[in-house]
Each structure stands twice: as structure tokens, then as C-alpha cells.
Length: 326
Image (cartoon, rainbow, N blue to C red; front, side, top):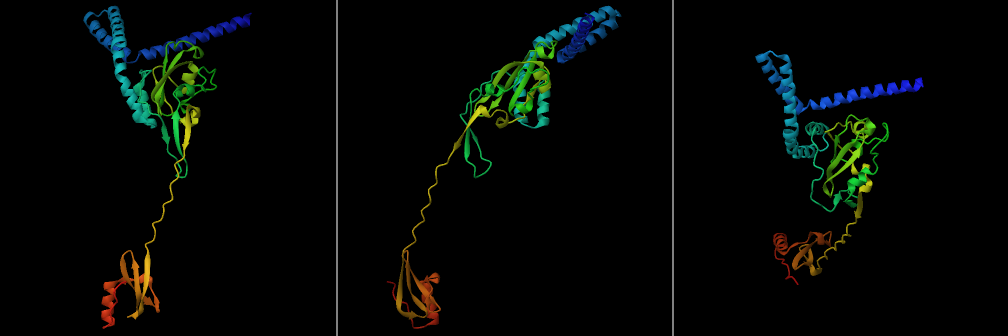
């Protein structure tokens, strides 16, 4: 009995400490832009009021009232307006950052407190051509399935117990971003309800998005997430979701073997006798070449034009002339 009572007291104390810690967490989130503006304006009004009246209690009440009023105005009027205006900026930032870790961290800072829209239409393209890494490899055409995001999360443990079976950025493909929101941060990790928006470019399908619910272990332990922040995937589709697409090997049509051009017809006509060392005619493609001799044998490889042979004969063998071509 005493043991049970003692355990109950310890559990109550643990819950009180957890509750106080959650209050600090909520308070820390209130000291964001709306809270900071409310506190700053309230302090200014407090300083002016106390200087004029020297009434501490009234000045403190003015501080609290003014700070709360400004906080409500900024949170529910100005802050949503800034929220809508920042969506395109955050999306463009992540697209430009790509896989650069330093750039992605800057985008995470910018996106703190902002969540991309849950549905954004994108251009539809049918397939993705995967270029071969080796010139001898076959060409592959990759087609992503229309429900690729749903298939991606089938292998995820959305509500893991403890710290087991956790999903982290390496289990999310590059180009896909997870944005986290939690409406009950005072609950225990296992009972926290997190809304996670999974969005990004699916190759061949364009911009896609999906909203799921998880617990605190999934968000905090797996992604080190805080409400209002986003995390970009660092994995590849090949590693994290090979079932999200189908690959079709494209065999190129056989290339016809080029037919060599026929060799031009040639006719060899010998002179009745050698003329100044020339053997005869080589008739080829309508041209009449004169064939010299090398070692007393016709040298067809060094056949020369009729004009060149006539000039050589006139120089070396005056009185001898070439006969007319056949």
C-alpha cells in the first residue's frame, strides 16, 4: 500500500515537472515576434506611465494590458498576413538550396513558423528518363506512380514507441519536405498529436502533398522537429522507396550496317610498247591516267594525269608521244 502510494506521488511529481517544462516551452514560443512586439510596446507605455504618474501598480497593469492587446492583434491579424505572404518565399528558398546543407539550414530558419500549403498543383509530365551511368548500359524510362507519397509512408512507423523504429531525413527523398505542427504540446511525447505536411516535387508528377498524424517520438526524436519548423529529406528514391516507381528498359532499334560504296570501275589498257617508261592507260571514273613503271612493272598506285605524263615524256624522251586514250 505504501509502495503504491509512493509510486503515485512520484508519478504526480513527474507529471508536475513535465507540465512546468511544457509551460516553459509554450512561454518560449510566445516570446516570438508577436510576444516580442507586445512586450516592447508594453514596456514603452509602462516607462511613460510610471514617469508621468509614479504609480507602479497602474503602470504594471498598463504594461500587461498593452502587451496582451498588441500580442492578440499581431498574432491574429498581422501574423497570418505575413504567414500567407511567406509561403512562396519558403518554397523558392528550398528549391534554390537543393542539397546544400548550409543553404537548407538558412531555409529552415526562414520557414520557422510557416507551413507550405497542403495542396499545390503542378505540371504533369509522364515519365522521367534515367540516363545510364555507363555508356554500355541500357536506357531506362522511369514512371512514378500517382500515389508515390502514400507508398513512401507505408514503411514508416508513424507512432513509434520509445526511440525505436524512428524515421529521419535520410528516409525521405531529396526534394521532399516535412513541415511539423503540434496543437497539444503539453501532452506527453507518446500522446502528442503532430500534423505533418509532406510536400515537394515528385519526379514526373510535379508538386504533391500529403498530411499525416504522428506522435512526439516520430517528430522530436526522429527529426529533432519543433512545431512550426520544416525538415528536408536527404535520401534518394532508389534507396527509400523503390516501389514508388517502375523502370522500363528501352532497347534502341538495331542500327543498319552501312553498305560500303561500290569501288569505281577501272580499266587497264597497256601500250603496244613502253613509252619513255610508261606502261599504259588506267581508265577510272571517266578519267584517263597514265601508268608509270617501277622495276619494269606497272605501278598503278602512282598513275598520273595525261598532261603530267606528256610533259615528263617531252622533257626526258624528246620525239616520243602518248597515243590517244582509248
